[in-house]
Length: 496
Ligand SMILES: [Zn+2]
Image 1: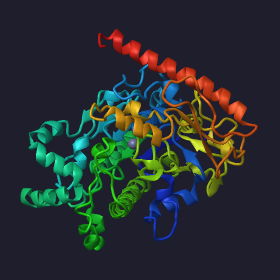
Image 2 (image 1 turned 180 degrees about the vertical axis):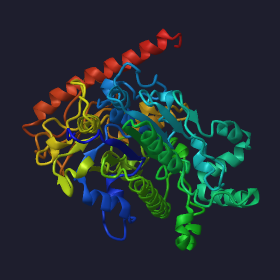
Image 3 (image 1 turned 90 degrees about the vertical axis):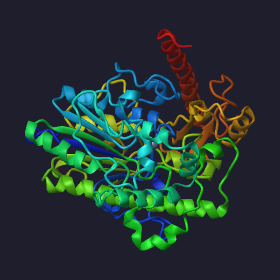
Image 4 (image 1 turned 180 degrees about the horizontal axis):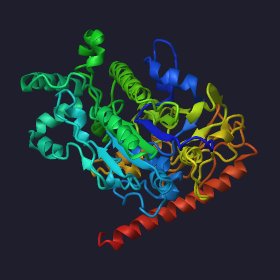
């Protein structure tokens, strides 16, 4: 931070489920994302950035703590949320005089998972919002409450459960057809707000209000935003009216992750092509919302003094790595995420960093810009160390695989099948000292045949493999310790 300037504001956008590849210009195959492209071209962007886990909770916990999942211990499904004793970005900034607001379309980023620890305000949506976006004004924005947060749409699960089971199943399997029904219902219910098209359309006014409140209080602000439009189920948006003919052909596309997981259904090549097209539509929607949000910062004359980070928590698969969507295992399309940064006061414009970045690097980098000291225990490094050099230690990703899936309906046979198809339960992914270890740029290292096994082995390695192997040995112990402590905490609360 420059001494004569006021502390910068900080804004972090997570484009949930948006892979690096989805935003990379590849011609007609990729949906255009002009807002992201011009933002990345003007600021500091990274050729390679990786998440720390292939699903929302552990990835956000790493973003907010600067720690890998086996250190913040927030990765097993059903486990207690983020330990409130672990310092978070919001909490550390509060100590430095910041006011912070968490605006999340993804309900996993809420007090229920502990991920809003340290924030002054928090607002989030419920999962069912994904299914009701066709009905305008279904989700009215109300200002965030201070402290514990206000769950927008908290009534939704009850409303949703009142629907007959067959209708719910239909909506979950064929979301575009369901949306047509919602649009019709929306028309009957009234004209509503025509600008409300995305998932959690309350985010834009809430974002503006958070920045405005910061200006009134004279505190610098930290505002976190999670946009969920690129998360399945995929539903066409108003913004794609020009492609409506194409969209209508998507109505029957099944998006049935639950039955895919159970091994009862898999998309054929025609369905996959259409799913990818719908994903492209969603990317365009996310990008347009990003454009609106960035223009709010400009309109309020806060652009110069604000550090803005645009990234994702994980990507999305359409059977690459034999996965559908995300969360079961590690594949490049899930592991590699976009990362572009605008530093405050015009620093580091038009720079493309050569070093591979990780979600754990955001906390130390942001604290440094905001004039606060990162805890010495964080796993991440600061961005400036990655501009001309690769990171010294590899960026690591924990694929906790099926251990995080809370489904009694997946048969043991299907679990075995998925175990044999995906990468192993705990994998490291990265480059060591800028060297390519194996494969075409980066390599995936697989350990053992299942979670928590001691018989780990490196499948691919060169002379640097020994170093990585000892790192993985350490992680294996830490993962086991983390799981044990999670179990002890649950038992300590009187649960089995
Ligand atoms: Zn996510």
